[in-house]
Length: 167
Image (cartoon, rainbow, N blue to C red; front, top):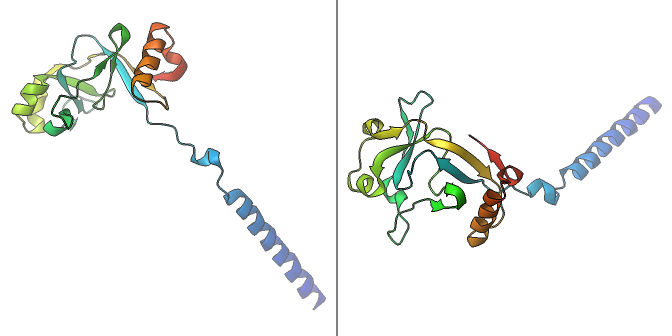
């Protein structure tokens, strides 16, 4: 009986300690919930593709993976969602640029007025490797402050201080 009672006390003590540790480690702290903002994408192209529609293709370039719906190319007021111009030829992405993005020879206006099947877009690819650079930048600000910050980093040749080079 003594062994049973002693064993029971030890087991209950261990269970209680385990619960206590779980409770302590289960408490959320502010660091656990601090989320990194979505990256802002800035890029520089070999030619001027600002008014050309971006699409995403497969690694081998034979399939369209992602393409915009014509309504995705416009803001609510009807104006086109062109990238914002930054210093030294960099552009601030507003459409979802990535390493497998290519540009069509179609302008936003042409694309919107003639929507087509994704497979029909492949012949309109104007350049299979249009980017000189693509950067993911992490900022908690937005609007003019963000573009000012990006332009400062570009002018000071310090993109690598706040951004990660993707290409």
